[in-house]
Image 1: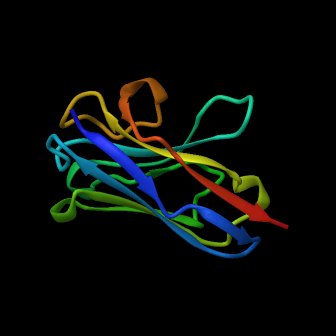
Image 2: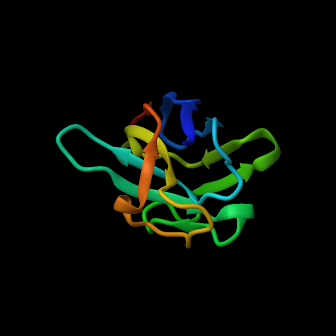
Length: 126
């Protein structure tokens, strides 16, 4: 199974940028759809972005489209989320996840993802 560790979260002012990383160990990273989700206290995880194996078909939530960019470096077993023009409503714990099966289709469906990192906090001040 793929094991995932996020990093790059922090405190930033509105309009600022952060770059999150998701490092994978154990398992074959390149053949899995990977996704980013975020969660605020008392609410369920919501989809942010996903990217297919070999970097195909990136998918974004409407709320982040045009501001966030998902990418992956399969040689380094790492996925990234570049977040620009951050807003206070982007404040959340961001987690990365891998599809339950390899060679799947890119999806925003939370329940398709079976391997989760521990999350990294992003706080955007107004």
